[in-house]
Image (cartoon, rainbow, N blue to C red; front, side, top):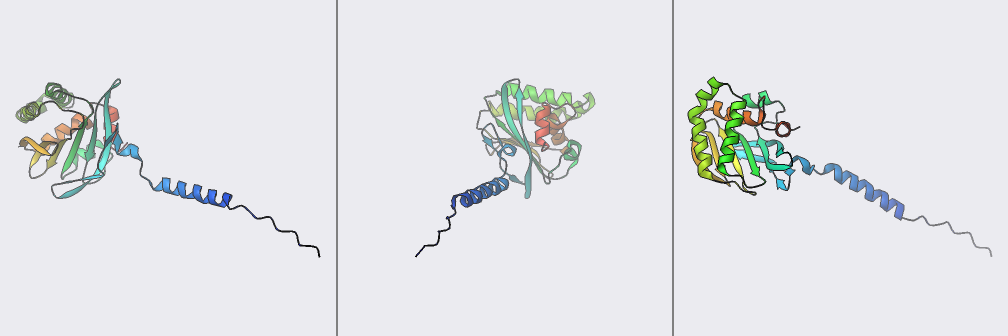
Amino acid sequence: MKSEPSTPRRSAFPRRLAASLCATLAFGLLLPTASAKEIEGVRFDDAARLGGKHLPLNGTGLREVFVIKGYAAALYLPERVRNATVVLGTPGPKRLQIRPLREVDSATFVKALNEGLRDNHSALQMRSLSDRVAQLERTMTQMGAAHRGDIINFDFTPDGGTAVTLNGIPRGQTIPGEDFYQAVLRIFLGEHPVDRDLKRGLLGG
């Protein structure tokens, strides 16, 4: 009796491969991009809690001069904003976080602070800010050198003003006035920012 020819058995390998590729692609689409939150090995939190408010991460950026990487920075706001003018006018708590990538002495920090303020404010504005700028200079001087791994926060709350912390420890006295915090932000987001790429990053670009 003649036997029926057997039907060739289809390999399950192509089906498994296709399923694996689909799963990999889908998983990749679900993963957040590391470039938005991690810079030079520094990982930023997705959000911060300040003044009883939840502040989502608005953007991150890198301060770099030629091949020297100075620090990574992040901006936290009540709502994500892509326009610098809107950021400056947004009410509520805010946080600017700076993460040094190398050692920076306090004198260099204070010099950069003053240059950034002068570049983005008129002489009249600088005079109105002078006492509070001097207070911030004293705070930064007392803080000493910043090192890789440090976390420096410039926090603003409507009730308290501007507070500086180093690794979670308050430094100096709180500096009053929303206009002062706006002045600090203009160093990074003003018409003449310290670094245009950094400005673009902090605005979520």
